[in-house]
Image 1 (tube, rainbow, N blue to C red):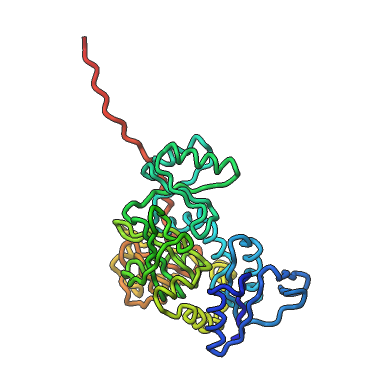
Image 2 (tube, one colour):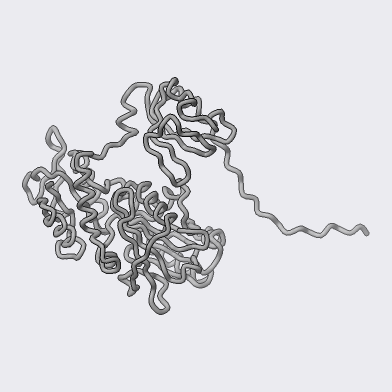
Length: 397
């Protein structure tokens, strides 16, 4: 395999470990400065120039795109995708994870547990927003911060309001998030590769610091994850479109709460804490996947006129409940079930013997007209009514 590591830091621990792991396995590998690429759209096919010359052929690239070059870096990754060069992290996945608001919106859509979060623009909406997440203390986050930079704990309502007002005056946009007190300055970093967690560590903040990032002086220790945490970490990475990711989670009273999904996780802390060859696991995964270039399934499968991809939800009162896939009649309607999603479990290519349960979600390919008739009308959102205290009844004179 010929692998390109897209990195502006060739001497960093992570880049060096990935390069060494690839060489040890007999692969060709080069570290390529992301900013030295030129995207070439002048010919008949998409191409890339590197240092002024046409780029040679690569089987795969591993993006290590820094926060400061997200726009150009994702454009380069996208061009590799157009050239059918395998990348474990797509341009779309990197962009989704880099913007904290966009990431939170995507994860919340898929019922991933997160600290209560809100985003507002107008100053008049700040105090109601803080109250919606449970009141002070609150955590204030810049939308594109990294390594704990731009994460502030505001102890009171007035302090929070002042911080947000100051940041907004400098054109900085922020998220307002519930402070998860029970986490006690600790979080978990799970390193996801493909469909499994290959290593996990607990980070603990030091002194009065509430941020547990290693760059903020936090200590690390190996941790054996509970299966619930593993499932959430893998799902979060997959939802974001990332095959290599660091998923940061708080240990809430009700289970894991995802804080962030990092598309370029550092390897030094987690390899030191776990004594595991994380870099080797990443290289092995890429080597096994180079024959499967990334494709947009919805885009490719919708080319056939009248056919497409849709998700069908099995509602509790539907005729499908209690029937096997074979008895459901979907195949007779020219509908093929690609995956069955049940809670946090994903069953790929389910067999006809699988019995359907309420709230199962079926990712299907088939006739759009038939599938459209099976999707119920969208429920209307119910307004949240704030209960007012009871008023005393007037007394007749």
